[in-house]
Image (tube, rainbow, N blue to C red; front, top):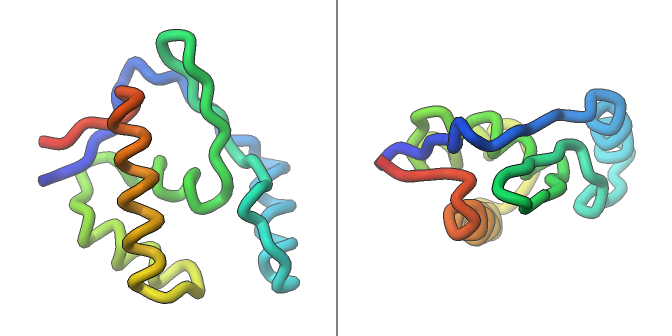
Length: 102
C-alpha cells in the first residue's frame, strides 16, 4: 500500500526552524521537541518535528518500506525504534485524516 498526503491539508515548512534543528542534531542534541512545520485541516493544527516533517514530505505515493529505508539512510536510529515511531506517527496522521493509504 502507498501513503498519500490529503491534498486538503494546508502545510508550511518553517525553513529557519528546520536549519536550526539540523544544526542542533549535528551537535548531537535532541531535536524531538523542535517544531519545523505546521499542518492544518478541518480545524486541527499539528506541529511536526524534523523527523515528522521529513515523513510528511515523503508521503506522496511511497510505501512504508520505502519510507523506512529512506529515513534509515537519513537519520542515525535503530531500525526497530524507527519502525515503531513511524507507524505510530502514520497512525496518528491517518486518524486525523491527514494521510490515506491506497
